[in-house]
View (cartoon, rainbow, N blue to C red):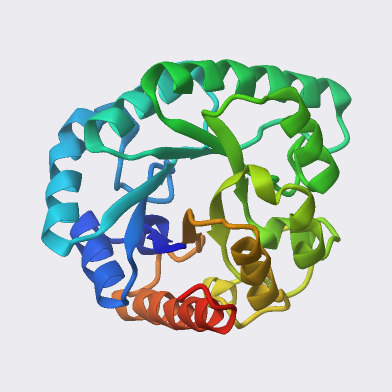
Length: 265
C-alpha cells in the first residue's frame, strides 16, 4: 500500500508547503485537493496554469501523484478535471456520490450521473472513484453494493473512507469485506463519535478516534489491496503549518505501524 496525504490538510497554505511537509512526514505520495473553498491547490478552472507547478513539485520532493479529489459531478467541471489528470499524470479522481440519503429518486439520479462520468473516465484512461458519504444517496455498505451492481467498468472503483462508514452506524472492519474487491482508493482518517461531521482536524488523525484502523488496514492487506491510503483531514484551513504537520506526521507513524503489524511492510 502507498501512504499518501490529501493536500486539503494544508488548504490554508500554498502547494509548495503541502508538498514539502508531506515529504518531510515520510509519505510516499500526495493526493491533490481540487476542492473549491477548502484549498487553492489544483484549481480546475485554471488547471493548465497549475499543471507545470504540480509536476515540478512532485519531481522536487520525490512524491508520487496518487490521486485528485474533485467532488463535483458537474460534467463540464469533471471534463476539465480529467484533462488535468491526464496532463499531470494523476491516475485516480475521487468524486462525491451526490444525492440525498433515503431519497430513491436521487439515488437513481446519482447512479446515472456517475455512470456517465465513468464513460468519460474510460475515454481519458483514468479511474473514477466514489465513496459512501454521510447524508448522500450512497452512504453505507448496502448502498455502495447497489452502486457496484450498477457499474462494472474497470475505470470505476470505490473510494473507501472508514469514518463515513463508522458514522453510518456500521463497523468499518466488518463492513469492508463486502466491497473490498472493488476498492481502488482509500481515504483514511479517524473519528470520535458518530455525528454527521468528522470532528476537529486533530481528532481525525489516525489513532485519536474510535475506529479500529489497524483492523481495517489488515483486511485490506489480506485481500491484496496495494493502492493508495490517503489521509483526508478537512477543517484545517485556518491551522498553522506546525499544527498541520503534527496531524500529518502523527498519522504517518500510525499508518506505518499498522502496515508493519499486519505484515504489509
